[in-house]
Figure (tube, helix red, strand yellow):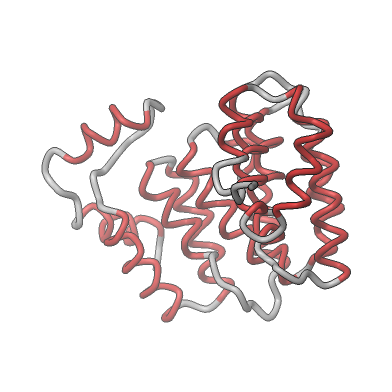
Length: 228
């Protein structure tokens, strides 16, 4: 499967008038083909089942470089898989996309692929920590999004708990950043964690809420249990 052949398959699923609405919604200048996400999911699933990992890496690379909204989403979806026997090339390709982030949807799809690779190899947290020092707010945000799986455990294992605490350390620094996108990433992380460890979120807020924007404090507390 060549990138051009894949693009033709994507274009064949375009719905009239949809591209214009997508461009207005996402507000980032690039090509929008006008394909629903469900159709992109079906294509990516088909290609994950029929292509081996090197073929998928090559196809994802080519589709990403086309820089259309849908081709970048499919590129990320091609690599979103829990178990990949030898995944270093997959990881390196995902990391190479970081400087291109300029859209919520594209960045989040890429980081969903990255989440699977982090969970598969938690030692990658050391590399991810370097993202927190980036001059790009998109890359700093990516460090929070890729680590979201560590908000999900009710009874985290020692390594999971260590990563959770490490990310909360980043968050304590991030809350002093006035950028909306950074404040939002912290709020999202705390909101998800509050479903499983509300006491830990309460402690974090007691120590750091004064630095957070009002919208971020409200979002972080969205699922906190009501106190009597």
